[in-house]
Image 1 (cartoon, protein in one colour):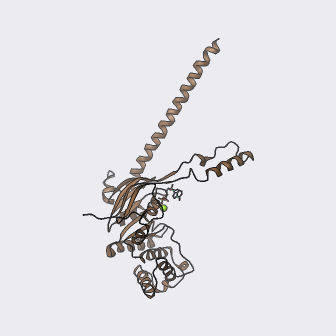
Image 2: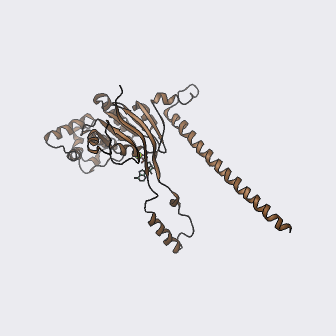
Image 3: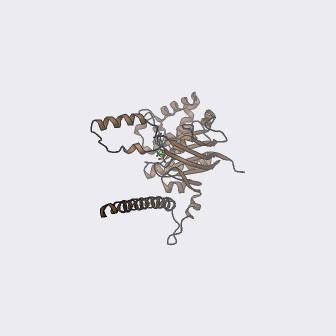
Length: 319
Ligand SMILES: Nc1ncnc2c1ncn2[C@@H]1O[C@H](COP(=O)(O)OP(=O)(O)O)[C@@H](O)[C@H]1O
Ligand SMILES: [Mg+2]
């Protein structure tokens, strides 16, 4: 029987720009037009409705797998991770982390999960050791054994002893990212959520971090959900990949099966990138088609209206 570490069921998350400072915008608009600063120019943001960051998203993450969420900027990846880690509440639908709902069982879920954010922050003047001890205290961990554990985790992730006690600012981005993962491991999470763990890293650091992720799965059996916009990374690391596009889940399968969705080109198997372009490209064409259709309908309506005006005004001209 498959055990699911995470279940995402029909989750919807909106960010309400509509409500945001609506009255302030109104006052500002009045002020700007009264002062001739804006004239009658429409305020663009005015028509922006709420952002649908996640649109009825459902999937399950199996225990012990590396599950990738692949999508371009703004597709909803971080929102999904924040919902799982109790930092945000869903508007509709439900998430279960090891059978627990983060909305009602916040503390228990926080004990099971840890998250490495895309911009992990540190005290840059302090060393990895100091940063991790600080992190451990936030988790209520302390005592002598924590120093040993910090050294153990950091050396395991490939940090040399001398780096452990040097300021973070002297380390490469790749090393810093490893420290971020090490900090997340302090709480011995069953599930690790990695939000774009390799974005902005050079190719060597990228591979080092990827090796760490693989090792955590293989040696510790940690369930890992990672987000990325790097197709190659998803292909190399993930057992299964969900593709998010504008808040919607548009595909979910193993990298191999996803590649089978796209016809082979010149006998070559397509890359995951081809799959993404294939899937999202179709969607874009659909949207463009809708745009073209509505534009045509509008032109027809205007032309018909013109004809009507002509018809109505003609008798008057003849008279
Ligand atoms: N706190 C927020 N307030 C308003 N809009 C947000 C907020 N967080 C995310 N969004 C919007 O939700 C959408 C998805 O964002 P995000 O989950 O950060 O995407 P990704 O991580 O894939 O780049 C974007 O349109 C983004 O602008
Ligand atoms: Mg993000």
